Length: 137
Figure 1 (cartoon, rainbow, N blue to C red):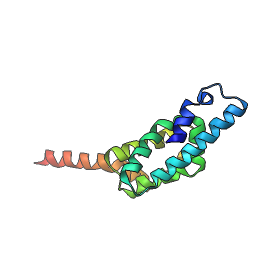
Figure 2: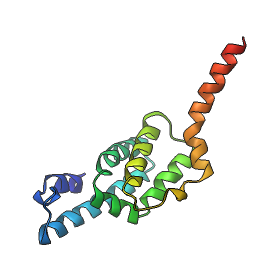
Figure 3: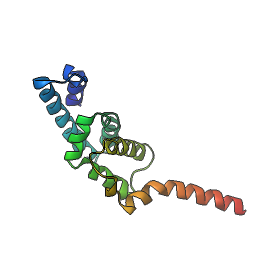
Figure 4: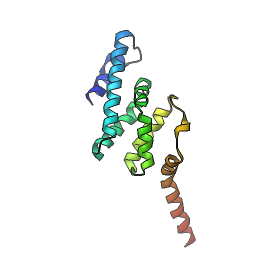
């Protein structure tokens, strides 16, 4: 969290990054990405949820996104979705961060597995099946 605050408040985190300031900002973003990835892999559900909330916000930043993706962060998020153990807020923040990261075009959408797609669509399928079942009564 400290590195996140550092890179948010550092003047180099603005759009006019140059030279040494850009290096400092990039290092702070790399550190923040590493810390968030560690917290996302935590066994603590609360720590994971808070990290995913932060990640959903930070993922719009191209430099941060590149750092997080280079640390295999996209794969970690995909595995969380594929596991089928995340629902509600946890899944919402995971998918928000995933989409923000993918929107940078750093990695191909081809990495999405059938398992990932099924887990994302499962709530819709369940709701549709319930709705149709209700119509049959």
